[in-house]
Structure formats: structure tokens, C-alpha cells
Length: 178
Image (cartoon, rainbow, N blue to C red; front, side):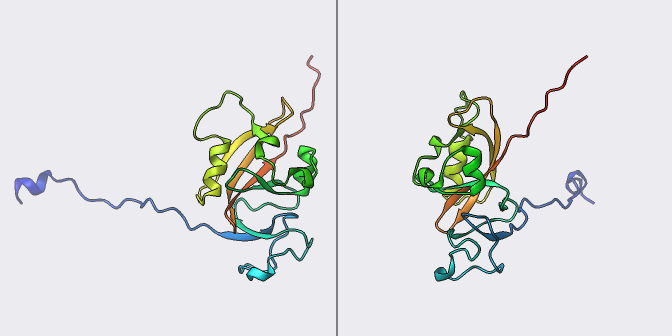
């Protein structure tokens, strides 16, 4: 064995950096009802059969909203394109008043001092442009202070948009301290 061969480190197998395959699913942009099948609906059959009002959209299965979730669909121009029934209640706004309004008129970052490129608006812009990585942010209704909600943000479509699923704040009970 030569001196060169003895000084070389042994080779070892390492894990690749490839991420796991992402599963996608279809849901109604109004009532969150799942699509009748896991197959993509025909372009002419994308109206929800459950409510008859929403358009079927595709998103990551791990972010998929349910009928109990509050969610918004935001387009690339940062305008609200869909509001779930639960979001209407949580944000105290009617769907007719929310559609085609800037998302900042409904929900804003909870931290007023946050000015980073990884904030709420950047996450929405990234998701609406097709980034497959989900993000999260802490937000609040635009006109309410002291209320914080976690927002999970992921791409959806077609057309390309961002799905923002809001988690309502938990009620806090006050306890007497002895």
C-alpha cells in the first residue's frame, strides 16, 4: 500500500438533500369541501359540487383546509380572491367586502417592527409565484391589537395564488392566584 492510499479518508454513504415527494389535493375555495376524487377536475368541472359557489383549487395535502378552518386565497397582486365562511366570522368581514381588496386591509403582521424579507407579505408573494415550500407567520386582524393568529401559507391554484390558513387564537382563561 502506498503512502497516498493510507492517508486518504475512508468513503462513507451520506443522505441526499432531495426532499420527500409532496402530495397535493383539491379543495373548494369557498367551503373547503374536498374534490370528489383525487384526480384533477376537468377545466369545465371546477365549480364545487357541495356549495355551488367555490372554485376547486389544488394545494399541498399538509396545508389542506377543512370546513372548520379560516382561510384566504390571495393572488400575485396581494388581493383577496376567496374567503372561507370561518374567515368571514374570524375577521368580521363579509365575503362581498373582502374580495379584490388588498390582504393588508384584512390581516397584517402581528409584529409592527418586522421588516424582513421573510415576513408575511414575502411569504404570500413567494407562494403566489409558485414556490412549493410552505411558510408561516404570526398575524392579526388589521383593526385589532392584542390578537395573534398563526398563518400557514402555501401555494394553490390554478390560477397561481397563495392559500393562507389562519389558526384562531385560543381562548385564555384567567385564574385567581393565591
